[in-house]
Structure formats: structure tokens, C-alpha cells
Image 1 (cartoon, rainbow, N blue to C red):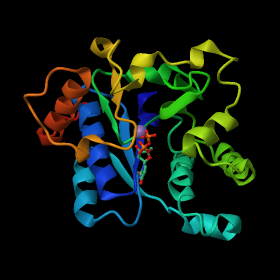
Image 2 (tube, rainbow, N blue to C red):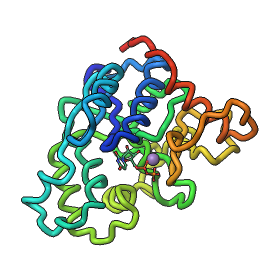
Image 3 (tube, helix red, strand yellow):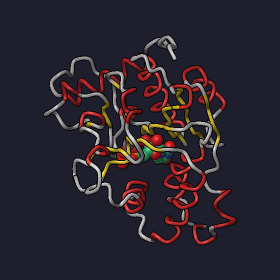
Length: 246
Ligand code: UDP
Ligand code: MN
């Protein structure tokens, strides 16, 4: 049922909180009937937390490294793993049966509640490496068992070059070949720099080092889909809170 399903995102810094806020507002604007949850770290300011509380049904503080240190000492001194491992905390949200994770640098352009018809682990192909899924948008089932298996996998995985995307692809390694219903259409995770299907986009993903919050809002730039998506992001950032329909 809709009551035990949620969209989930993650924001460990003030910047990513801006992104999460916009993503959450865009979900509301398109009338989602599901809960919206954001995972934050203790370093997020009370002001940013308060803004998130006005948009999200739940703001959940998670440990970035501390809880991992005791059981996985080998990770000490590798703070860059913190965010990767923190993303895995979404599997601990067991009050929900099914969830859709959305990166904080995504913007929802249409209602995407139909994603809940999919099963774990559903995701769209990565534009640069289509045999892998992009981990900015994925359907999953919270489970403490899966969570601990993921952590154990992370401990043995070794190479973290791909961050959470590399880790998740190596865990859900039959994604590419096993079940085509777990391949989301590209328009559910459209890279902001791709224009071919821009007009059909359902979710835009501002992946890469430069995020919308790093760039200026410029109404005169309307040429490319990237400019249009950027303007939409800033318009959502400045918009009033959309009504809650869930
Ligand atoms: N994230 C975060 N804090 C960070 C880096 C990342 O909370 O310092 C979260 C945020 O939800 C972000 C996701 O992890 O959208 C993945 O990182 P990012 O989107 O920067 O990676 P990309 O999509 O560019 O590969
Ligand atoms: Mn991203």
C-alpha cells in the first residue's frame, strides 16, 4: 500500500540539503502520494534541518562513520567512504516495505509514483557505462539482512573508485542480464547534459562535479536542455512549498 512506501534521499552537507529540498519540493509539486524521507548527518545545521522538515515527512539523522568504526576498523582513516556507506543506511528504513532512492542532485519533472510497481533492485542504465546501473535513482526494499550483507560486501569489495555506484553494481551484479523489468527507462534518470530525450524527462540528474547550487540562475540562458533544467531547478528552489497531497 502507499502508506508503507517512501521516496528517500541523503544530504550530509548544507549544499546537498539545498539539493534535497528542491528534490522534495519537486516530488510534492507533482503530487506524490508516498512519504518523503531525507537522511541527514549530525553536521547539518538546525536551519537547514528546519527547512527540510517543512518539505519532508521524515528527517532521519544517521551516523556517517561512527557506527561503522567499531565493527569495521579497517575503514578508519578513509573518510571518503563515509558518504558511500551512509547511502547504504537507506536499507535500514524498515518501517517502509518498498522505497525509491533519489540522489539529492535530482529534479522530478512528472509524477513518478509508478516506480513503486518495480522490484529491488531496479535502476536505469548509466549513460557512460550502460552495463552498469546509475545509482542516482533506484527502487529497493529496506531490510536489515540486506543492509548487513551490503556492509559485509563493502568490507571485502576493496576498490571504491566507483563510490556507491561501484559497490551497488558489484552487489546487484546480475542486474545487466537477469531481469529486464529491473531496467528503468532512461527518462527516469536523465543526465542533465543529455538532450536527446530531454522533452520526455521524468527525473533529471545533475550528476558530476558541478551542481545547480554552484551555478547562477540566468533566465536568458534557454538554449540547451541543460539551461532549461537549471532554470527549472532554480525556479523550484525559489518556489512556495507545494501542497501536500499524500
Ligand atoms: N551526498 C551527500 N553528501 C556528499 C556527497 C554526496 O549527501 O558530500 C549524497 C547526495 O544525496 C548525492 C549522492 O550522495 O546526490 C551521490 O553523490 P553525487 O550526486 O554528488 O554523485 P554523482 O551523481 O555526481 O555521481
Ligand atoms: Mn547524483
